Length: 189
Image (cartoon, rainbow, N blue to C red):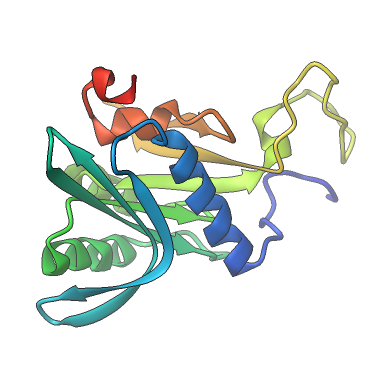
């Protein structure tokens, strides 16, 4: 099927990381002393790590929150081990939160682990995946009234029945990231 938004995303690893960096920049740009960097080296107790994207923000007049972001350009589903490695980097560097963005999806065990540890999980897809239609055609055109995004993300969590729930992330639509950061709403005003 050509033009199927649910197939493996055709994006370079660098383009993928820059898209994620841009989503994060737009999600919290109103915050005081907020910065996002791409491919930054960070020192931990066990040595140095190169992190795909790092976001830092200041809250409560001086408390610095550090978010480590890993971008996994994979074809196969993300396993729990990948999340365990990110959690170890969080502890080793004294960082506060972690997010994994992937071009594939997450195994159920990985989602359970992420949810228990407060790590966000985001599936990145072609922007056409933000619109669905019932059709037997192999491709479809987005209606003119629908916003057109090159790429979108689905913040993926598990509900009480352990079914996946998805929350849209797109250019200028980042409420899922703000909610996950769990910061007081007055900080964003």
